[in-house]
Length: 281
Length: 309
Image 1 (cartoon, rainbow over the protein chains, first blue to last red):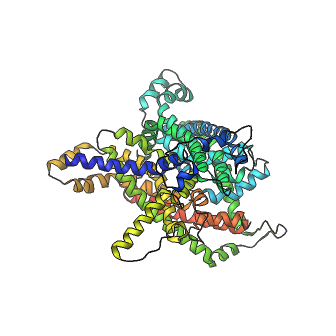
Image 2 (image 1 turned 60 degrees about the vertical axis):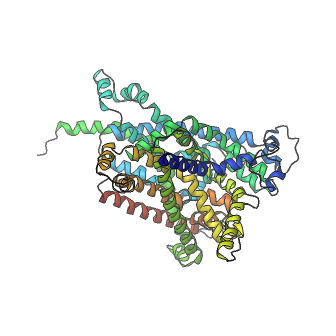
Image 3 (image 1 turned 135 degrees about the vertical axis):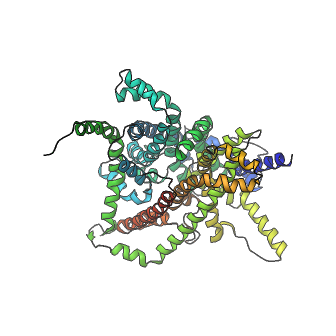
């Protein structure tokens, strides 16, 4: 009995820890400015006024920061384009490499694995200047492609590592059977292996998408206008405008978080099993 | 006379496919990680300030000497070490606590599991903005901290003045707290998987032998989790040293230089002072530090025989 009760108190503390910061911000995003100064926890006169600024496409509003807020829908589209491309590149390059590393014994595979892991340990700030100059010399500044390439390179080592672990959990007999039936190695990969490993691929794809959606440094450096600017950078631009009320910033924050949050809820089980299983396995 | 065995040719063709499969990934990483890091090293050996584009010349390790002699670097390094150490420690403890909870069976466990990913889904820069609000003048946590300080003052008859984020101590530790909050879910996922891999017979046997729950944790759970703890420590050490977006949004390096972590210092060097030579030297030093730490961790893994090479 005591054990049960303490377990539930424990769970309650964990839930409060995990949700309270975001819950407060979400609540604030529905408050009129006055209520924040009164330090309310729950909006007494809830309003969606803070959000309307972001969807004022015609541009009638003259509020502070309205010019930036109006760009929000475009920025979300930019983030979607970048994130989807990063996800696809990760899945194609990552699954090919991980398949070779986990299935086909070849000389130099340990070396290659160390190369992949080593490139994961290079911090973004360490390569930001050469990357910036590289993108500038190819005329890629302020394009989606520059951000896509940089995000792909820093997510790819992790993708390969996770997929390699995941692929190793699939029994070899499946492919052997396919090979006996006359499949080429690539045919076995496409017809037998990929369908079985779909949960792992989905987990890794979502992971790469969310990582790209949230990345900030390269996105900040490479993009200058709304032609390519993703939503994380726009949100920080917005918050730096003086005198934008925090309620409006909070609404913007909620809009930025919405998609990754929904994705992580939907694919929660796959992410937890896919990532956890292969990191420790 | 050398006899070429048929297996020699066979292994050649067998090696060909895996290399082709790895090629796209290798090309991407060579072009956008290996090549830049090479260029970065080369630039770090030059005097290269964008404000003086006419004066770009090679001057060896001069940039490194300047940095190692500057108090800014040692200040940033010290702050980063403190930041990273505290972050690794707190992430491991909190994530372990939540993972152990999620391993128990109770009603509503699914809900807790679903909520677990919330902090992870929030982009670092938005996390920073959130905590600006939480710790700002009207923020929820600011009010709590004020009350706590007031209570402590009352209880102990002392007089600590709480100045919120204007205090270097509060700002740095708040940044750590926000960073930890966002890092807990990932570590927790790894711990949870590791706990679930522990054979249950061991617990049953321990129970039969009358082991207390603390001893079961100490002598069964913890040894089984050694590998997972090291993996999390590696990840979090790297994350701690590269903390940038949170600092950018939450403190902007301030107050004063209280939250000048080394990634922030590098960014300032490059894009505020436009000293590309010096900034590259900075970034090389960060890479060296994180690599050294990673090697130490990996050696620990080897010693335990947990990595087969």
